[in-house]
Length: 88
Length: 376
Image (cartoon, rainbow over all chains, first blue to last red; front, side):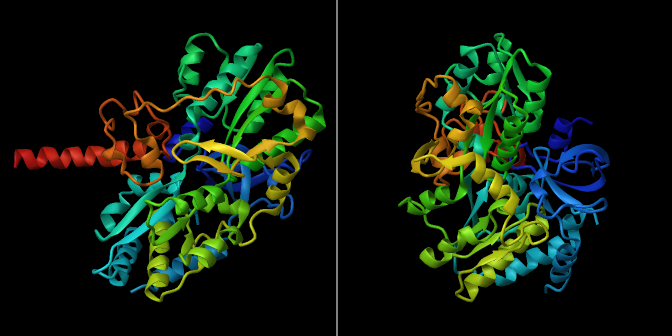
């Protein structure tokens, strides 16, 4: 699947679309380049914008136009689900 | 956890929708603006409208970068690319946006070298691979996208890649929200705040909305449960008479934003004194230009910009739809002259554009309801 197919499969366009992916491997010769699993497709993702808090293999990141924008917090996601389960 | 499916769990969606109904005061009409086009898309795609009580009205905001770009900038970009033998690189979203002389895709059919790129760094890659050509990247987007362009320009400069430039159309979200609030025909109760812009700028830049306007804003994720939970949070604030900036999208949005991304933007960009927005007119300090230190990579400084100004087709009411004054189907051209196949305005092109979202998801449903009611 190409990047473009990926974008349309996720139902959005490039501009606001950001998708979660799991970091598989950081390039040994360039710490800004990583292989990231995005919906079971391995993609090259630029980590240059996360240089203050570098993700490690196994971390989840939010990807937008080929760049990781943010690390995703599993704890916060669990907390959110917990809050929602307690509704009503 | 996959960070997608979990937030579409039907049982929790039902439960959250019930909570919304419980919190809703039936004697009150609520007007919430979702600022971001990604939210508009999600509302239609997931049919969230159908889950909400009729007295909650969702107003679509100006956060679709393709939609707010005045037509003349497309023509300017194309004209820049035609002055010299240039490879014109842009995101796929831009390809079908009509300029006065046609869309980039139509120019491609006429022989211009137009390439779709997924990332600004792919455009730089094109420049590396074609050292005897010039690659111009048509940059567009809010603060979500601007840092990627900034970092790409920093790399072009440090690597000394001189056959690359950026035609910068990056805009900033806060002045657009201000313009919406200043608009006399706009009455809103609260904002669903843009999630992905906020990964970069954080939550503090919205505090003036609370202080000056006493309006709640909840920074929201894009999955159905994210948006429904944000509406719960807004209703709770309104019920308690509060106005706060709240962050529903904590798993992704740090309160302080992304400092590295903000540093890259500050290094490469400065605010333009003013910039024209489709539908909103000229807004001061609402867009970014490339700093002089990067003049060599700035298509506007490197080539002559014609400064084409094109008025929108008279019958099209893109401006009113962009401001949230009209719903997409209330425009005279909607679904007749203007369709995703033959768009007249940009709102019908981008999947974040409210007209395209409405057409692709809601319009067919309404049409089906009409057919069913006629046959009944």
